[in-house]
Image (cartoon, rainbow, N blue to C red; front, side, top):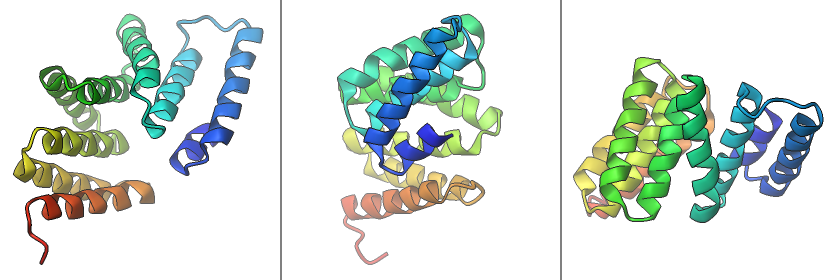
Amino acid sequence: RFIHGAIRGGSLRAAESALSLYGGALTSMGVAEGSAEWGGWLMLRARLAEARQEVDSLASPARRLLMHCYRHEWSEQMPTALRLMGVVMLRRRRFMEAVELLSRARELAEATHHTADAVEVALSWVDAQQSSGEHAGALASAQRAVALAASARDERLRVESALAVARSLMSLGRLDE
């Protein structure tokens, strides 16, 4: 939780240090690579790279996380893994693959009632739609994120969702709303 909180709070150096210690502890304890603990480490590594906006650093842990989710049936982490790979594809301008991954992430997050995952997927959709010029769709996705975030316990997600609505309105030239 500390590492996740450090990433969300923008304390990326602290998160990196703690993540390194966590990985070292897993290795020294002989934890099997396919364990849920390593899955958590991969997810945190990917989230750290995403926070730094480092697509090359994000690609490898996101790909490995997704592979392990399928192989070991980590359904809890699957929406995040799909979303992170969708973000990689989006940043590499591979929009069709990004849309496919984000669609699957949205379906799983909503089906499993993982509110925070659903909000993060909706926010990734906003980015995808803005990048492809679908500004009205981006606004709808941002508004969906706001609605989902209302029931989330994470203030950061509520703020990010509200900002996504504001950015979407600005891109549509609707400055008076």
